[in-house]
Length: 427
Image (cartoon, rainbow, N blue to C red; front, side, top):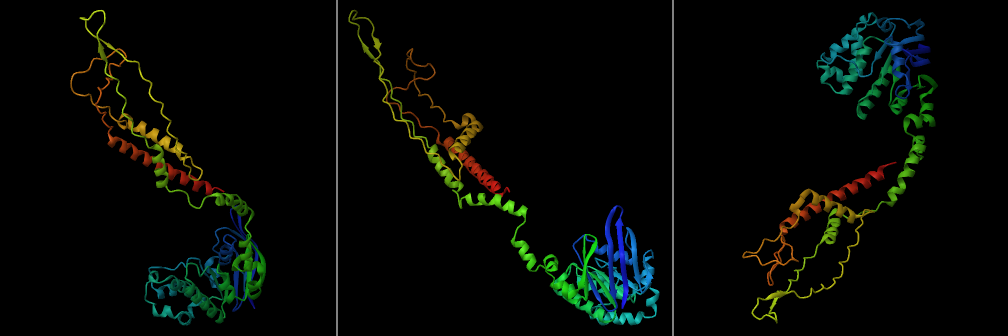
């Protein structure tokens, strides 16, 4: 026997349609489930039936032959329709029993108030145990029981529920669906909107598919559960696996563009420490050899004037022996990166940053009188006499410079590694 019959029901929020000519029917002691994606219009359907839709509603909703469209929500409750909204909507500061008694305000429930309360406690024994407990201190599943029990206190003929298992654990969801089956056994018709398609179809008698604001299919729950299209869309069955096995055009393009980069990338490149070690070997500067001191000038007497003073005779300058050029260190490459250029750039940056402090200090002048300078010699760079050792440069500043170069090399290697990784991520 059909108690609730919806025909051509439409709803719109301004210029945006939310429901388009939906037709649904619910009989006595029957569970009917509405399946659909988010935004398909499921919640709007329940709100339009209960008279609380904020948009413009057209069409027909009949309860036992009485037209409900245009009625106030409290009058629709008097006709025998009770709604359990999404998010429960209970009064958290009131006790369990106070929440239940608020559901018995309808005139149709006054005479059966005690009977309905006993029926709720019989269906949900936990509510009887915690009837004096504040509702907000209860678990999510227990609060959902309070919401269903409060709706049942209005003595409804049709109970509509919007996502009752939302936010519940699998164990609590199983208990909830078992409770809905027990409510159905009392003769109350249930219109259920639920995302858990598998659990809802297991307890339902019939079902509707709502897609893009329209009802596109109606069938028994058993046939809907065995439909490949329903399995693919809502149950994660074989159709869903096949869909996952064959990627879409966009995913295939992305994988095709990313795969060569992944295969060309080396499994493991040299570490920054290895790059730094090879760079240091390339930067090693041999210790400068001591310059050959010019021979001391010889004093020879003039043959024409033995008593005259002596004049120095400069010997012919000797050509220095050619030295073979030092072999250049081969460039060190790590995953296609020319580390030699990186080292050179890091060394130049270090020199600019440190300025003159990175160069070895000039040797201090020897104590004693300055030797006479010849015209060929520079007045600011005297040549040390023979036998004088040239002081070594300050190794402390060289160590600081080498430390700076190594730090720059480490930074350059890290940037190169990040650049390679970012390049591999690009589609």
